[in-house]
Image (cartoon, rainbow, N blue to C red):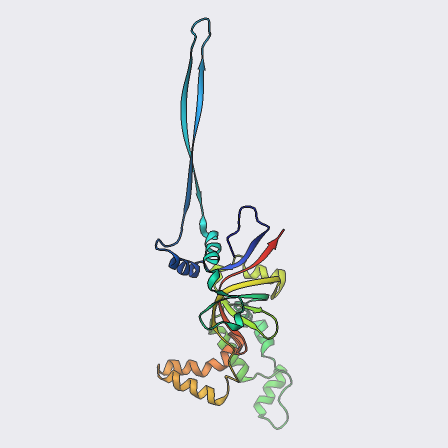
Length: 284
């Protein structure tokens, strides 16, 4: 995957570029750091002739003038192309054969989901009221006060639903990406908003959740599908025991993780990817 020449049969349409992480990796290929500014200068010489009337004086005087032109270029978009060119020997093109920490190339259908929309929905009183409706009023034989309240409102509130909404309001709401590479292989990633070339709202209004076209993501593989059910009692107890070694706060987070991650995080059946670039190819 070489850098794009001046006249190419195709160019890359970047959707996401993690410039900071690319810079950290690219700096390891040289001893001078990364290129932040590119300057080119050229010098031209022009000749000016001074003519005289031959009747007065036969002669011709010429004088030279030099001018210098400087052009300054922003190389930020050369950095991902340069990195992909230098790193092509270590990119694994069959990600299912890659190990944790390796650089992989994944190609397929792309979904982008801005989870902050969910928090906005929960914060809105009208939408929140509709989300809290769970169906019919309590059956006969239940608590009299609950039946009376349900009869007056026409709805019943589930405590677990309220707890879920409370968590949605306080937990981090990242921009998520999912890339399906065919078959059962799915790759989950969180995106830095600063790395998106197009605003998430624009993508949502134009495409919905699935972005049209075939996309390529190159990044670090950092998680693999988990065998079995991670939310079994045995696994939850084991995670809590490990978390308790870090203190009560960590143990509390360990209790919440089995409920929070399936909603806002990586599904247990998906690979985890830290993307460096996401792009598609535009061909002639």
